[in-house]
Every structure is written in structure tokens, then in C-alpha cells.
Image (cartoon, rainbow, N blue to C red; front, side, top):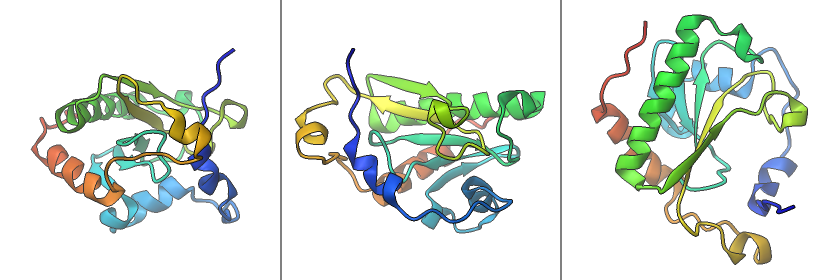
Length: 169
């Protein structure tokens, strides 16, 4: 069995967590108007796209429905379609700006599946490059992200503004 090591995520794991209230972190971001501080790249009618503050890889995005639900079955057809269309557009934007070799795309539903914010489902989009894993995370406990989150967020936000509009029903 091979193991994926991501020791830079320990900052997220060990960071103090606010007591769970009614609203998830994603709901709080959805209700905020400070998209720059929250690393929000695009907003649609049913969902939004945000950068992961503790990425596995540079350009790690998440597509989040505005409505806080834990299970995929709880999304209505319009929300489900919007989630997938935003995922598709995010891939287009990342290909254009970052030119990755491939992507990991998926959801962690439930605590045992690794969901960090299990009460609010979200789609992860992680760009990947040939040879993008190396000794730094394993030996040096350091992630090498070639560009600051905020600088990359500006490039991606501009690309989302210029991308083909997402058709939401």
C-alpha cells in the first residue's frame, strides 16, 4: 500500500476550531461580501467557487452550494446541475491559467470519508502535474506552492470573469 503524505495540512488540523453553530464556514463565506479575504473566485445563483486555504496542491478549488446540506441527495436538480457546471468551468479556468496535466475531483461525504466540514458538502478540484509530489512534503514537512494564494486568486478571479458564462437553470 502506498501512502499520500500531506504534512503541511497539520496547520489546518491543529488550528482552533470554532464551536459548531448553525452555519458552517461555507455558509459564513457565502453570506460574506468580502470575496478577496475569503478567496472566493466566482459566484453563481446556486453555488460559488472558493480556493482552499490549506491546499493539497496549488490551485486547489472547491465548488460549494449556497444551501447547507450534508448529503448529495439533499441537493435539488438545479443545485446539482449548477454544482457540476461550476466544476466543469473551474476545470476550464485552471487549465487555461495553470496548465495542469490532470485533476483529482471529488467529495468527502461524512467524517469517516475525511470531510473537514461535514455539514456542508463541497466538490474538491485539485490540479495535478507530472512529478508534482516530491521529497519536500515528506522529508521537509513543507508544501511547495509556487505562487501566493492571493496572487493566484487574482489571476483565477479574472479568468472566471472572462470565462464562458455558466448556464444555471
